[in-house]
Structures are given as C-alpha cells and as structure tokens.
Length: 115
Ligand SMILES: [Zn+2]
Ligand SMILES: [Zn+2]
Image (tube, rainbow, N blue to C red; front, side, top):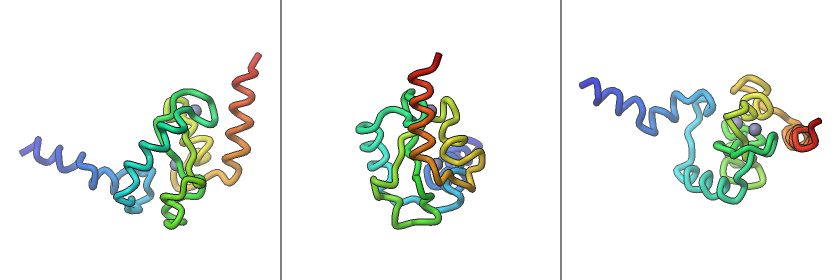
C-alpha cells in the first residue's frame, strides 16, 4: 500500500503538478524529448560552464505557453551551482530574469577569466 502511494506520488504526472519549478502549469507531452535533445546539443550551463541538468525557459512557459517548445526560448542551466534558481529565476521559482542572456554571458566570462 505504501509503495503504491509512493509510486503514485512520484509518477511523472504528480511530480509535474507538485514541482514548484512548473508553477502548476501542465507540460507538453513533447517536452521530455525536446529537453533531452536540447541538452545533448547544449550540454553546459550557460551561466557557469558545468554540465547542465536543466533546460530553462527564458520567458516562463506558464506565462507564454506558445514558447514552451520554441528552441529560441530555451537555455541550458545547472542546478549544481544553483544557476537555475539564482540566475534563471532570481531566487524565486515564481519569477524570472529578464536579462538572463546577458547575465549568463557575463557570469560565464567572469568564471572563465577568474583570478
Ligand atoms: Zn551553472
Ligand atoms: Zn527555469
């Protein structure tokens, strides 16, 4: 019984609903494949250069549903150094960084040329 509940809770549908990064929005069924493809083509975090685990939306897909699958709106970013939360969302999953592209490039350059 417990296993059943645990399985239900962690099934992708439930996770999608409870994942705060989705802001309660439903994901396209095409998203997992696109995320995988994008990560294989853009494997590093655009803000710090480590391996990216996440594909972030420059404009949030819960506000701009038409841009969910638009590759020009995607940005590889890491969870390891909290770049997703801090650079992508300015510390709040409900918010987003309007200067993400510039800030990422600036951070990456600083890191690559750090003293
Ligand atoms: Zn990073
Ligand atoms: Zn994000």
